[in-house]
Image (cartoon, rainbow, N blue to C red; front, top):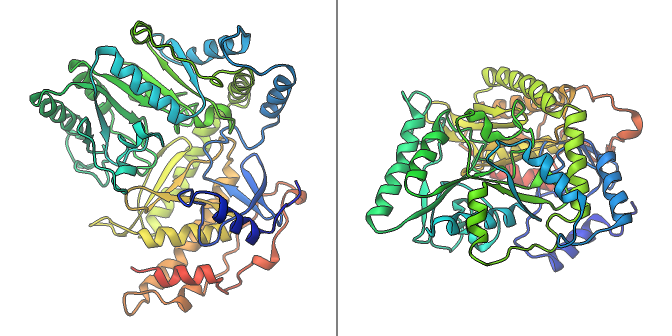
Length: 496
């Protein structure tokens, strides 16, 4: 692909024409990506980056089978789902085969936000209740109905929590109210939901739904304790509500041993509604709500038709079928188990070595690294996390930081991520933490000086051998101990 504009011009045009709320990764020094393949992305100068961020390109960027399926169907037909077509019914059949038998009715949409919005409509129509219980720090989408139930968003802005929204504590056993040393954290956190229900009912309010990601992503890669969802579902259903499992970020085999992350909680836990999106189309806009026949029939009986012009169109379903085929043919679930376990082993070894690492948590290829300044107090190392992701970018590894304190490094790469990639990432991570901790130990006034931080040691790491044509080192960007303006700015801000 030819470059239309220089990087500075692209940035200037983006600032002029794209809404300022639409942020870019690495805002102090953004990357201009021109192409991608598998788990790698390439900028306008050919610099290769290992992508540890994109859970959307689920089976790998530009997977040839997915690209071929889209092009082939586009050549034949693309229309809405009011016409009969085999693709939508074949996809619905394949999709529901991965779910418990009771989850059998599909509604196709174009994004996870649309899916979660529809899930709320289904829940509220089911018994005529209105209120929703959500988890603290949760994010479920950008529509107004979803910002209202997403503390991750509404707590940062001017929005006020609506009366029909109830926020339960995140079931975080590392940093939350009930931690790993609690005798029964699952019950304790579930009892918090029970108290919310009882309080709402005492004020004449009725619970329509409890909604949660099966593993909380934006909240800091949180894995709920075993048994929590079962207990919550029991409390919610007793109150006449339904359980919505948001699998938009964590579905389609990312957990490894299970196709859906909610299945980690055991066969005795089945949500009433499941939403999915991002990885479903490998970057193509495709999403879905799957629910029970009973809930679907209640929704239909209202007389209000649900129709989505592009939801379930032939091209989207062809893409979705190709993604399912690749997951199976390339055994990407097995890869998530194998590589995920290996990566966790490497990271646990780093935790024993580096005091900045407070916690390593994750399942499959969904992993969080919680950086702390103090192990006992678990003080979030927010500035250090930002420093790390920028330094990793310089080494050709893309990571992001999230969680309520922005101190949790998120690892959620394409599912074709290899053990070689994991080793490459962790070796650089080790080198960066080593230098950072040495700087921290020698600080004299509570602020790490820019000159000290900028004396970056060159840590030799073997580049994964994927062919010389796939990687061209950008010599002009090698730091060799010299800070860019952006890195200097970050160093000035880095306080410990």
